[in-house]
Length: 293
Image (cartoon, rainbow, N blue to C red; front, side, top):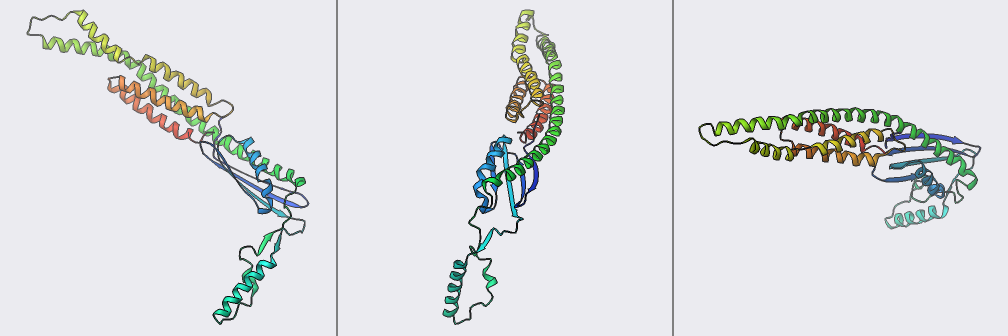
Protein backbone atom coordinates (compact mmCIF):
# COMPACT_ATOMS: atom_id res chain seq x y z
CA UNK A 1 0.00 0.00 0.00
CA UNK A 2 1.19 3.47 -0.89
CA UNK A 3 2.12 5.60 2.15
CA UNK A 4 2.43 9.35 2.37
CA UNK A 5 5.41 10.77 4.24
CA UNK A 6 3.18 13.48 5.72
CA UNK A 7 1.10 12.65 8.77
CA UNK A 8 0.17 13.29 12.38
CA UNK A 9 -0.66 11.04 15.31
CA UNK A 10 -1.12 11.52 19.04
CA UNK A 11 -1.85 9.34 22.05
CA UNK A 12 -2.22 9.57 25.82
CA UNK A 13 -1.65 6.92 28.45
CA UNK A 14 -1.54 7.06 32.25
CA UNK A 15 -1.13 4.93 35.33
CA UNK A 16 -1.07 5.66 39.04
CA UNK A 17 2.19 7.61 38.77
CA UNK A 18 2.49 9.18 35.32
CA UNK A 19 0.44 10.72 32.56
CA UNK A 20 2.14 10.39 29.16
CA UNK A 21 1.26 12.42 26.05
CA UNK A 22 2.92 11.74 22.68
CA UNK A 23 2.64 13.67 19.41
CA UNK A 24 4.26 12.40 16.22
CA UNK A 25 4.53 14.53 13.08
CA UNK A 26 6.17 13.53 9.81
CA UNK A 27 7.06 15.33 6.58
CA UNK A 28 8.87 14.25 3.43
CA UNK A 29 12.61 13.63 3.30
CA UNK A 30 14.81 11.50 1.05
CA UNK A 31 16.10 9.69 4.14
CA UNK A 32 14.84 8.90 7.65
CA UNK A 33 15.50 11.59 10.25
CA UNK A 34 14.05 11.19 13.73
CA UNK A 35 13.97 14.00 16.32
CA UNK A 36 12.74 13.29 19.85
CA UNK A 37 11.84 16.07 22.30
CA UNK A 38 11.25 14.98 25.88
CA UNK A 39 11.71 16.27 29.44
CA UNK A 40 15.28 16.41 30.70
CA UNK A 41 14.51 13.84 33.36
CA UNK A 42 13.35 11.41 30.65
CA UNK A 43 16.34 11.73 28.33
CA UNK A 44 17.34 8.17 29.22
CA UNK A 45 14.54 6.78 27.06
CA UNK A 46 15.17 8.99 24.03
CA UNK A 47 17.13 6.28 22.22
CA UNK A 48 14.43 3.72 22.97
CA UNK A 49 11.78 5.99 21.47
CA UNK A 50 13.89 6.53 18.35
CA UNK A 51 14.35 2.76 18.02
CA UNK A 52 10.58 2.23 18.08
CA UNK A 53 10.02 4.99 15.50
CA UNK A 54 12.68 3.61 13.14
CA UNK A 55 11.03 0.23 13.32
CA UNK A 56 7.72 1.68 12.13
CA UNK A 57 8.75 4.28 9.53
CA UNK A 58 11.09 3.90 6.57
CA UNK A 59 11.56 7.43 5.22
CA UNK A 60 10.83 11.04 6.12
CA UNK A 61 11.50 13.59 8.84
CA UNK A 62 9.76 12.48 12.03
CA UNK A 63 9.34 14.73 15.08
CA UNK A 64 8.29 13.11 18.35
CA UNK A 65 7.14 15.34 21.21
CA UNK A 66 6.87 13.57 24.56
CA UNK A 67 5.25 15.18 27.62
CA UNK A 68 5.22 13.44 31.00
CA UNK A 69 3.37 14.63 34.09
CA UNK A 70 3.43 13.08 37.52
CA UNK A 71 -0.03 12.37 38.93
CA UNK A 72 1.06 10.77 42.21
CA UNK A 73 1.70 14.10 43.92
CA UNK A 74 5.47 13.76 43.78
CA UNK A 75 7.16 16.77 42.22
CA UNK A 76 9.83 16.18 39.62
CA UNK A 77 11.43 19.58 40.16
CA UNK A 78 13.38 21.15 43.00
CA UNK A 79 14.79 24.52 43.97
CA UNK A 80 18.58 24.88 43.62
CA UNK A 81 19.26 26.90 46.77
CA UNK A 82 22.99 27.29 46.11
CA UNK A 83 22.34 28.67 42.61
CA UNK A 84 19.78 31.10 44.09
CA UNK A 85 22.30 32.26 46.72
CA UNK A 86 24.91 32.77 44.01
CA UNK A 87 22.54 34.97 42.02
CA UNK A 88 21.66 36.91 45.21
CA UNK A 89 25.32 37.54 46.08
CA UNK A 90 26.07 38.80 42.56
CA UNK A 91 23.05 41.08 42.50
CA UNK A 92 23.84 42.40 46.00
CA UNK A 93 27.45 43.13 45.02
CA UNK A 94 26.35 45.02 41.92
CA UNK A 95 23.74 46.94 43.93
CA UNK A 96 26.39 47.92 46.51
CA UNK A 97 28.73 49.05 43.76
CA UNK A 98 26.08 51.35 42.33
CA UNK A 99 24.84 52.33 45.81
CA UNK A 100 21.41 50.95 45.10
CA UNK A 101 19.18 48.67 47.09
CA UNK A 102 19.04 45.00 46.02
CA UNK A 103 15.61 43.61 45.02
CA UNK A 104 13.49 42.45 47.94
CA UNK A 105 11.22 40.08 45.99
CA UNK A 106 13.01 36.74 45.44
CA UNK A 107 10.33 35.50 43.05
CA UNK A 108 12.11 37.49 40.33
CA UNK A 109 14.95 34.97 40.57
CA UNK A 110 12.79 31.90 39.97
CA UNK A 111 12.96 32.16 36.16
CA UNK A 112 16.74 32.51 36.07
CA UNK A 113 18.63 29.57 34.50
CA UNK A 114 19.28 26.70 36.89
CA UNK A 115 17.20 27.96 39.83
CA UNK A 116 14.50 25.35 39.22
CA UNK A 117 15.82 21.95 38.15
CA UNK A 118 14.25 18.62 37.40
CA UNK A 119 14.69 16.14 40.16
CA UNK A 120 17.89 14.13 39.99
CA UNK A 121 15.77 10.99 40.10
CA UNK A 122 14.77 9.72 36.66
CA UNK A 123 11.21 10.65 35.78
CA UNK A 124 10.76 7.39 33.87
CA UNK A 125 12.21 4.28 35.45
CA UNK A 126 12.67 0.97 33.67
CA UNK A 127 9.38 -0.40 35.00
CA UNK A 128 7.53 2.66 33.61
CA UNK A 129 8.98 2.40 30.09
CA UNK A 130 6.16 0.03 28.89
CA UNK A 131 3.64 2.85 29.56
CA UNK A 132 5.63 5.29 27.43
CA UNK A 133 6.23 2.69 24.73
CA UNK A 134 2.51 1.92 24.51
CA UNK A 135 1.75 5.63 24.03
CA UNK A 136 4.44 5.98 21.36
CA UNK A 137 3.21 2.92 19.46
CA UNK A 138 -0.41 4.13 19.62
CA UNK A 139 0.63 7.53 18.25
CA UNK A 140 2.60 5.81 15.47
CA UNK A 141 -0.44 3.67 14.62
CA UNK A 142 -2.58 6.80 14.26
CA UNK A 143 0.17 8.41 12.21
CA UNK A 144 0.16 5.35 9.95
CA UNK A 145 -3.61 5.59 9.49
CA UNK A 146 -3.20 9.24 8.47
CA UNK A 147 -0.45 8.33 6.01
CA UNK A 148 -2.52 5.50 4.54
CA UNK A 149 -5.49 7.80 3.91
CA UNK A 150 -3.26 10.30 2.14
CA UNK A 151 -1.55 7.44 0.30
CA UNK A 152 -4.87 6.25 -1.15
CA UNK A 153 -5.65 9.73 -2.49
CA UNK A 154 -2.13 10.06 -3.93
CA UNK A 155 -2.37 6.60 -5.51
CA UNK A 156 -5.65 7.44 -7.25
CA UNK A 157 -4.28 10.77 -8.49
CA UNK A 158 -1.11 9.20 -9.92
CA UNK A 159 -3.06 6.34 -11.52
CA UNK A 160 -5.21 8.89 -13.33
CA UNK A 161 -2.13 10.80 -14.50
CA UNK A 162 -0.57 7.54 -15.74
CA UNK A 163 -3.69 6.99 -17.83
CA UNK A 164 -3.11 10.42 -19.36
CA UNK A 165 0.47 9.46 -20.24
CA UNK A 166 -0.77 6.20 -21.73
CA UNK A 167 -3.22 8.19 -23.86
CA UNK A 168 -0.41 10.38 -25.20
CA UNK A 169 1.70 7.28 -25.91
CA UNK A 170 -1.21 5.82 -27.88
CA UNK A 171 -1.44 9.02 -29.95
CA UNK A 172 2.30 8.87 -30.69
CA UNK A 173 2.19 5.17 -31.62
CA UNK A 174 -0.68 5.72 -34.07
CA UNK A 175 0.86 8.81 -35.59
CA UNK A 176 4.43 7.49 -36.08
CA UNK A 177 3.76 5.31 -39.19
CA UNK A 178 1.84 8.14 -40.82
CA UNK A 179 4.86 10.44 -40.47
CA UNK A 180 6.97 8.19 -42.71
CA UNK A 181 4.14 7.82 -45.26
CA UNK A 182 3.63 11.58 -45.41
CA UNK A 183 7.37 12.16 -45.71
CA UNK A 184 7.52 9.76 -48.68
CA UNK A 185 4.69 11.57 -50.46
CA UNK A 186 6.16 14.98 -49.62
CA UNK A 187 9.67 14.20 -50.87
CA UNK A 188 8.31 12.57 -54.01
CA UNK A 189 6.26 15.68 -54.80
CA UNK A 190 9.18 17.98 -54.02
CA UNK A 191 11.56 16.08 -56.34
CA UNK A 192 8.94 15.99 -59.10
CA UNK A 193 8.49 19.75 -58.86
CA UNK A 194 12.23 20.39 -59.02
CA UNK A 195 12.83 18.10 -62.00
CA UNK A 196 9.67 18.92 -63.91
CA UNK A 197 11.48 20.86 -66.66
CA UNK A 198 14.58 18.66 -66.79
CA UNK A 199 15.21 15.26 -68.29
CA UNK A 200 16.64 13.79 -65.10
CA UNK A 201 14.73 10.79 -63.79
CA UNK A 202 14.74 9.70 -60.12
CA UNK A 203 14.14 5.99 -59.77
CA UNK A 204 12.04 4.33 -57.08
CA UNK A 205 15.21 2.84 -55.58
CA UNK A 206 16.59 6.31 -54.85
CA UNK A 207 13.32 7.39 -53.28
CA UNK A 208 13.06 4.22 -51.20
CA UNK A 209 16.62 4.67 -49.95
CA UNK A 210 15.96 8.25 -48.82
CA UNK A 211 12.69 7.30 -47.12
CA UNK A 212 14.38 4.33 -45.42
CA UNK A 213 17.07 6.60 -43.97
CA UNK A 214 14.39 8.95 -42.67
CA UNK A 215 12.34 6.07 -41.22
CA UNK A 216 15.37 4.64 -39.45
CA UNK A 217 16.29 8.02 -38.01
CA UNK A 218 12.73 8.57 -36.74
CA UNK A 219 12.10 5.03 -35.49
CA UNK A 220 10.72 5.18 -31.92
CA UNK A 221 9.57 1.56 -31.57
CA UNK A 222 12.05 0.73 -28.81
CA UNK A 223 11.33 3.92 -26.88
CA UNK A 224 7.58 3.29 -27.01
CA UNK A 225 8.05 -0.31 -25.83
CA UNK A 226 10.22 0.79 -22.88
CA UNK A 227 7.83 3.59 -21.98
CA UNK A 228 4.84 1.22 -21.96
CA UNK A 229 6.82 -1.19 -19.77
CA UNK A 230 7.74 1.59 -17.33
CA UNK A 231 4.11 2.69 -17.07
CA UNK A 232 2.93 -0.89 -16.39
CA UNK A 233 5.57 -1.29 -13.69
CA UNK A 234 4.65 2.07 -12.16
CA UNK A 235 0.98 1.08 -11.93
CA UNK A 236 1.91 -2.20 -10.22
CA UNK A 237 4.10 -0.38 -7.68
CA UNK A 238 1.19 1.87 -6.74
CA UNK A 239 -0.43 -1.16 -5.09
CA UNK A 240 2.78 -2.81 -3.87
CA UNK A 241 3.66 -3.50 -0.24
CA UNK A 242 5.76 -2.01 1.24
CA UNK A 243 5.46 1.51 -0.20
CA UNK A 244 8.05 2.00 -2.97
CA UNK A 245 8.70 5.72 -3.23
CA UNK A 246 12.31 5.41 -4.39
CA UNK A 247 11.38 3.07 -7.24
CA UNK A 248 8.58 5.37 -8.30
CA UNK A 249 11.03 8.30 -8.37
CA UNK A 250 13.36 6.30 -10.62
CA UNK A 251 10.55 5.38 -13.01
CA UNK A 252 9.54 9.05 -13.27
CA UNK A 253 13.07 9.84 -14.42
CA UNK A 254 12.79 7.06 -17.02
CA UNK A 255 9.44 8.46 -18.22
CA UNK A 256 11.07 11.82 -18.90
CA UNK A 257 14.09 10.21 -20.55
CA UNK A 258 12.01 8.18 -23.01
CA UNK A 259 9.64 11.07 -23.77
CA UNK A 260 12.57 13.37 -24.50
CA UNK A 261 14.10 10.80 -26.86
CA UNK A 262 10.81 10.32 -28.70
CA UNK A 263 10.36 14.07 -29.00
CA UNK A 264 13.84 14.56 -30.45
CA UNK A 265 13.43 11.72 -32.96
CA UNK A 266 9.91 12.31 -34.20
CA UNK A 267 9.85 15.15 -36.72
CA UNK A 268 6.13 15.84 -36.42
CA UNK A 269 4.04 18.55 -34.79
CA UNK A 270 1.29 16.18 -33.59
CA UNK A 271 3.80 13.94 -31.85
CA UNK A 272 5.56 16.98 -30.38
CA UNK A 273 2.30 18.21 -28.84
CA UNK A 274 1.57 14.75 -27.42
CA UNK A 275 5.06 14.62 -25.88
CA UNK A 276 4.62 18.02 -24.23
CA UNK A 277 1.28 16.93 -22.74
CA UNK A 278 2.81 13.64 -21.58
CA UNK A 279 5.72 15.41 -19.89
CA UNK A 280 3.33 17.80 -18.14
CA UNK A 281 1.47 14.80 -16.66
CA UNK A 282 4.76 13.17 -15.59
CA UNK A 283 5.87 16.37 -13.82
CA UNK A 284 2.64 16.29 -11.80
CA UNK A 285 3.37 12.66 -10.92
CA UNK A 286 6.91 13.57 -9.82
CA UNK A 287 5.59 16.23 -7.46
CA UNK A 288 3.31 13.68 -5.79
CA UNK A 289 6.01 10.99 -5.65
CA UNK A 290 8.23 13.35 -3.63
CA UNK A 291 5.88 12.71 -0.70
CA UNK A 292 5.70 8.90 -1.04
CA UNK A 293 7.59 6.76 1.45
